[in-house]
Length: 46
Image (cartoon, rainbow, N blue to C red; front, side):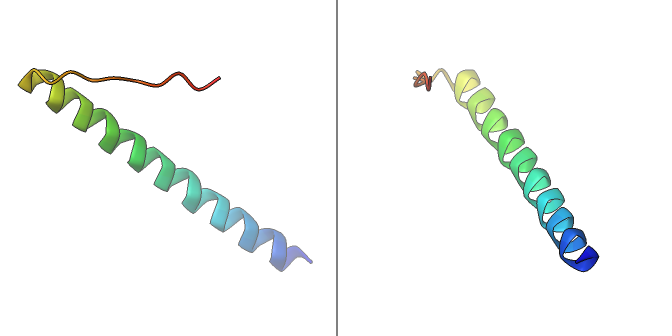
């Protein structure tokens, strides 16, 4: 079963890097909106 563990770890690494890209794009968009003077609302997720 080592092959299955390897595949799982590869997909986990890809998912983590994709999550980081999404976070970077979101923060860049929020920063751009702030510079344009847009009102930004955030929802608190408990």
